[in-house]
Length: 457
Ligand SMILES: *Cc1c(COP(=O)(O)O)cnc(C)c1O
Image 1 (cartoon, rainbow, N blue to C red):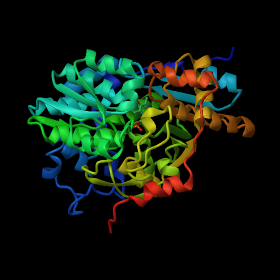
Image 2: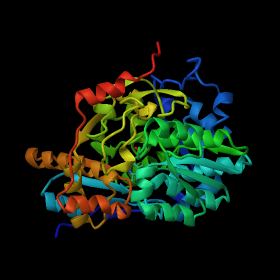
Image 3: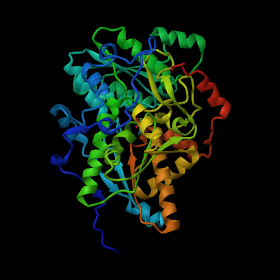
Image 4: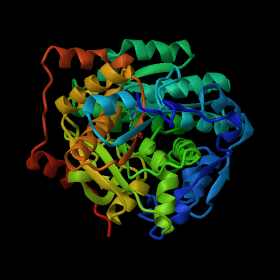
């Protein structure tokens, strides 16, 4: 047995956990484009955003210059309950693949909500409480964000109203019950409880909903109720900021052992885990200190980066939200049924979109069956049952490790393992029964979505 100088799990001491979030925008020469008012097309002001979002979060959203932002002690304390998350050396996977590559993954699934989303949920709930609000509203697709937010709200004694995409509400009753156990109310979307929900139902009777619809409903519910604001679990700059704890912990852990990654990989839905994981590394890249290959992985069924357009678009189906410039498939794009629920958003973080447009990162799309093959291979040797979303990153990490096997290169690969798949067993069942499909939208499908982009010059 060769001697292992790197432990299986690199843990950090509590004292080594980040006390500040890192704001990668401060180091970007080309800043992400501002959110626009959909009526006037002028950049959204803090005052306008303040009707929808909590004040402190608006300030974070608009702050492109402050490099480090203090993490309030109350949030640090909550982080300590489930962080630092382990950085694991995938020795068993390396052996199975017979690759000379060194593979590490940062595992964010060790909390009840089962994913990285809790890192931002707790921050957003904290600022809502600090502002003296009664509660918050949100949408959830696959259910991870709603679960995380309901945990965070119960911790700070805030009311939490979740609009859950109807198909998930029906297919994932267990997530729904976790949310209710933490005290949240859960409404299947589109619903009759909002004006925009009624309108969508009238236009598309029998629709099983989408993230874009649920966002419209949650925003309406927040702006129509006194003492409520809307919170979002991905896409926004503030969410990437909170998720920077993933990358900072990863970097501290690697630095302890003098490890420099060659390739950093993450799945991308709205871009928050990837944005968080890469942030300190991207910072070094932007400042010209180091270079890394960074790869975003998305489902072939919802290919925002690889087949979308970099343009201003609506963030939601009901077109009630500000316009964001991002890689998008059009707010009217409804992806085919795909089991990576958390990756089904039509758009992408505007920060990551700008970085991608500037050639600072790559993107790859992968098909569903290949993703589940990777998930199964990983689970069988590493033990963790991965979330389908996370398994997109596993797929590309394995592909890169297999390339190293061919070339003999000993590259160091780091990827984000964002969550566990316990609530995704219907998807695993489909895979195990050989019933999984690999639907890829045609160019015509995509053209229809892109035709609905707003005209912004
Ligand atoms: C929500 C989710 C994602 C995708 O969201 P990002 O904002 O792109 O990170 C990925 N993995 C898991 C487990 C999720 O819950």
